[in-house]
Amino acid sequence: MSYCRYLPTKERRSRFIFSSKPVVKQVLGLYINSGKNIEEVMGGVLAVERSSYLPKILTQQLWEHYEIISPMHGVKMLAKTRVDALFAAEEHINFLALENEKLTNQIKLAIPELDTVYGYLASSKDKKGKNIIDAFNNNIEQVLKQVNI
Image 1 (tube, rainbow, N blue to C red):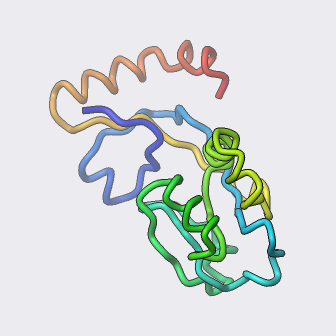
Image 2: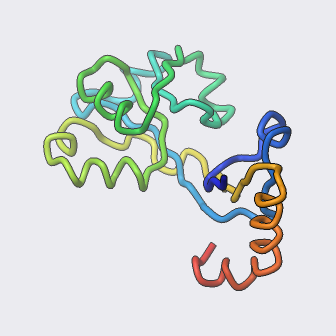
Image 3: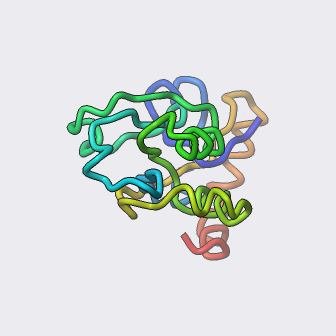
């Protein structure tokens, strides 16, 4: 089984084989309710997707973390003011908001480009998984040129 967008943490390296270079670039930002400003919500409840990487600035601000199961779950929680902010991939959240005009009016990007992370192709450590990663790594330059990373 193969996955994309994984950050190679110590725990994940024990379970998966990773590509030698990243395959996805994610720009992460902080979203808040449209009726609020960042000063009002700073240090409140921060929705974070399971296994998300948190930049140092967010850990220093003493946010209370609320684990969400998906970006859409976080957007809905934020729109209903059940959380004060959402830390998520800008491209994904912007796409979800564009699909739903109501959400576009309820949330806003308060701090754009807070961080950038790179996701890697990961696969199970079995022979098939190793073959997938080896094939990808052997053709990585060609693949990366096509996807412009």
